[in-house]
Length: 190
Image (cartoon, rainbow, N blue to C red):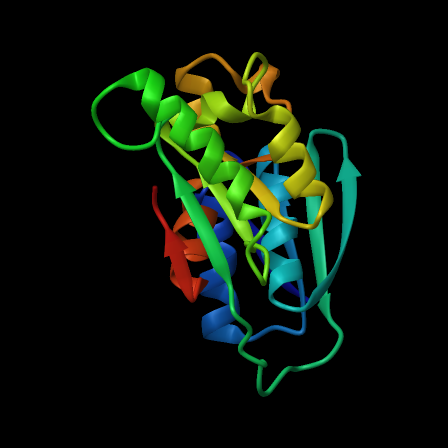
């Protein structure tokens, strides 16, 4: 079993080291040691996205993310992946009241797309839209219930002191955000 020790390293380093190990060694079984829940979840999601069956083994302060590949995929069917990238609370420049109305309309309209967006990524002040007090929580929850992944930048949530107030979606990291944008066939940036 291939072993990667990422204890003491913060995200996105554990994900990047796992990615490099997969690219250079292509292990069918691997174990990644981490020491925090955020790294555990990020490595777990990354391994699952690469076709690994993942289990978690916690031993004291250490957390081991164990991945076992079930089948090697030689060809991945290309599907349309639409991602919305939102970096502000308002849409456009000018009047903030108008911008808030436009953003609400933009989010509302996303559920009419076919296919639905794969992901909606919130960064910078955009994370305020996924947090307590946002007028868009019901619309975003509806999109999430339809299968759209809602990702909020963890660094941004920390900066605005909103990590504990996140109400829809999940916390992400810059590696996953950049990877999502590069894997998308279309990126919508209002």
